[in-house]
Length: 288
Image 1 (cartoon, helix red, strand yellow):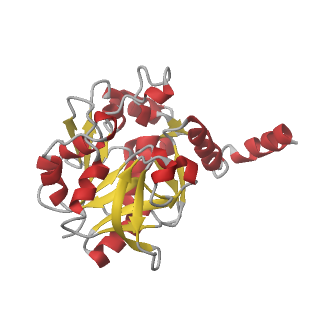
Image 2 (cartoon, rainbow, N blue to C red):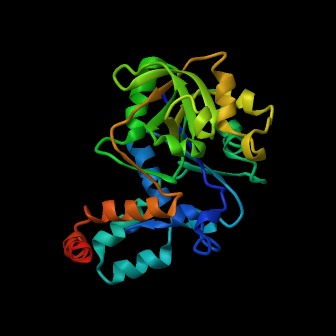
């Protein structure tokens, strides 16, 4: 079956960005002039995804409004003759039925958030995109992964190499040697101490999963941090089905981290036609 549905877990509280996220969803933090969630949605749509499933929580109204019509704003732009900006605003709203919202009533972890989408996804493979992981690439990373899934017909996760001292921040893989940037995973450990990490290959926020993962997540077993961890469920899935890691082409920015978020803003700003010519001399002067 084709991968046509994508799940966006967006119920998190964004505590690492307080006070900025006290009243604004962290997924709405802007990188240059677009919120993080818009980058993720654009990646999904450019990869052939037909249905976007948002797993939300309290205080996410701004996110929902972003992908809805704003009649007053559109009319104001129309009256002022700002045609290009009007087209851009109108393009934010996918056609009716493309976006579905469901609620995660308690913050019980990534695995639980994905499980909340089970009835919408149904019995078919699906993608998961975490907006915190912003990836700059010529070809959308999810599109790259779907091509691998179509070839392998098995769950596939996006992988990067991280410094050994950072393994305690990620789900870490025990895996075979890669072949053409794809490798079979033998095991997964959620946030292991450096001395116990099986490698420095880390899973980041792009997944393609088979529906069997929902049955495993239904057990509601808690792991690290007392949460229902997706990594733990995938470790159990490994006993039944193969899972592959994929080293994608592109640069990933950890926008759940303050430094990573600022790096993303700089990288995307340096390619933005309206501001790059002003920003570059400033940066050169700042560091000379």
